Image (tube, rainbow, N blue to C red; front, side, top):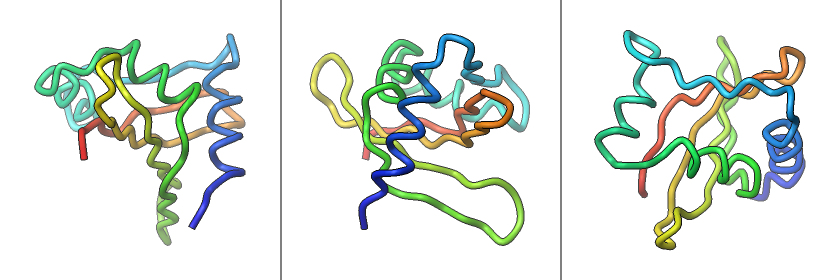
Length: 101
């Protein structure tokens, strides 16, 4: 299944100069930052994937916010997945987790 519309919307949101890309530092919502450190994935890589990558999965839970999985590559060509909660009306993207599949 292709998520072309979600991909276009994520790339537009991530490219907006006013967007806030949240990577919570610690605590229950700090999972992404911890995984980025462990996996040596930089914020620059995450931002590049959000601005140019493809959305490959959309999770629509009965409760809570939608989560979109974006796919792109790091500078070495390794495939990286970034799971985000896009908040278009707030002009922000919360990064939930980051990993190599």
